[in-house]
Length: 290
Image (cartoon, rainbow, N blue to C red):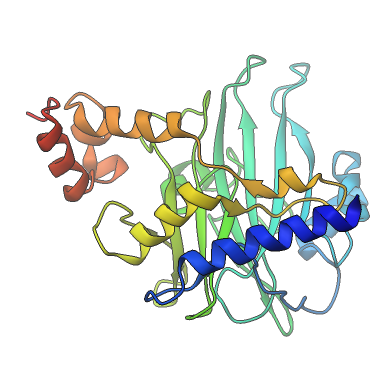
């Protein structure tokens, strides 16, 4: 049975790659391996927290070969039983062949599942990890409410979890992210977000997936047809290693974009302007775009 599953998975990858053959990109779910920097699997900050704080004991179980590592942090409010959740995803973010960590810290806002987030990037270097994120004291975790994370959140807010589509022709990893139901950013940053590394700014850059003929449009079309590779723990079932397109997420984005009262339309300086290509689609469909 295991051999059959592996064979079928190979067929899926081959078919997915073939769809983009001959185009300007060669998109695939088969992401290449990366090299880990020397030292412990997770950044030193988290190794230190694991030595001192029982809540971070899960960090000690991380292995160099892990593609995903996650666990609870401190309690948000004493007695509330709501903890920040830390999820590290191993992705070569800057396409240099070295492994990087994409960290999503989800802060619980209520027992009902409402949450808010911030992302921190740890780039693998020959001498360890280079941190890209909001200003946080060296001995504190990367979460909202610490240091300048609240005021700098908008600079480091990419998505709740990141999945990957690899362009084998150009050796570039594209990230797919979103803010899902019960996330406070879902109204202001709706829909799937296609991201790529910006070497000049040393961070991830949001691309316009609605621009016809653009790399982001090509990546988004591939995602809708084949999904994206989701970094997962070794014990994860095969179906849990692929992030599948959810049409409801796109429909919600279209609804927000075409409504002049939505956060994006009414406060573009805060949330980023709606793509002009998407607005043109609203006009063609006769949606309210006053």
